[in-house]
Length: 246
Image (cartoon, rainbow, N blue to C red; front, side, top):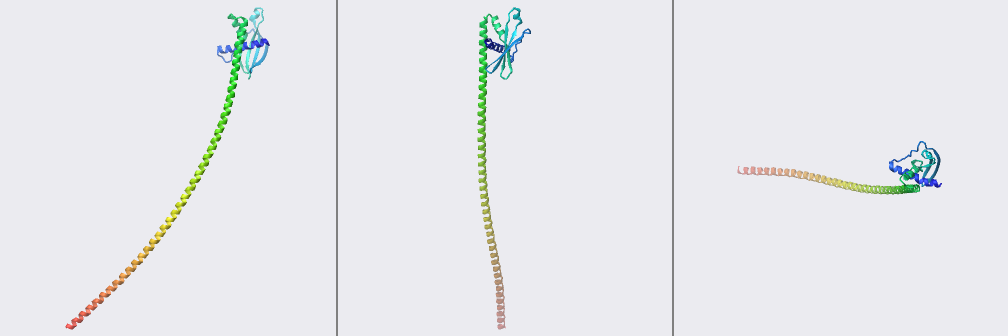
C-alpha cells in the first residue's frame, strides 16, 4: 500500500505532464511490446479512480534486475478514461538529468500531488460553479415566475380599467343619445306647433281677406247704386226744368 500511495501521484503527474507537453486531451503511453502486465490494483481519491498496472521491463531483465514499471490510469467517476501515465519513466528522466533517485521520486510525487490538488480544486470549483448556476437558475426561474405573475396581474388590472372605461363611455354615449333624442323630439314638437300656428294665422288672414273683398264688392255695388240714383235724379231735375221753360 505504501508503494501504491507513492506511485499514485507520480503516475498521475506524468500523465498530466505528457498531456500539457503534447497538447492532446487523451494521452496514451505506449508500453513496450516485451512488457507484460502482471499486477493490477484500484483505489479512489477525490472522485477519481486510479488504476495501476505493473509491467515487466525487458530492458531491466537484460541487466538481471527486475523493475516494475508503475503505470497509472486516471479514470473519472463516470468511467471515462482521462490519460495513461508511466511514473517510472518520469523518475528515470529525472535520474538521467543527474537527480538522485529519492529526490526524483520526491519531485515527481510533489508535482503529482500539486496537480492532484489542482485537479481537486478544479473539480471543487466546477462543482461550486454548477451549484451557483443551479441556484441562479432557480432564482431566475422564481424571478421570471414572479414577473409573469405581476405581468398577468397588471394585464388583468388594465383589462378591468378598460372595461370600466368602456362602460362609462357607453353610459355617457347613451345619456347623450337620450338627451339628443329628447331635444330632437322637443324641437320637432315646437316646429309642429309653429307650423300649426302659422297655418292658423294663414287661414285667419285668408278669411279676413275674403271678408274685406266681400265688403269691397258690397261697397262697390252701393256706390254704383248711388251713382245711378244720382244720375236718375239729375236727369229728372233736368227734364223738369226743361218743361218749365218750354
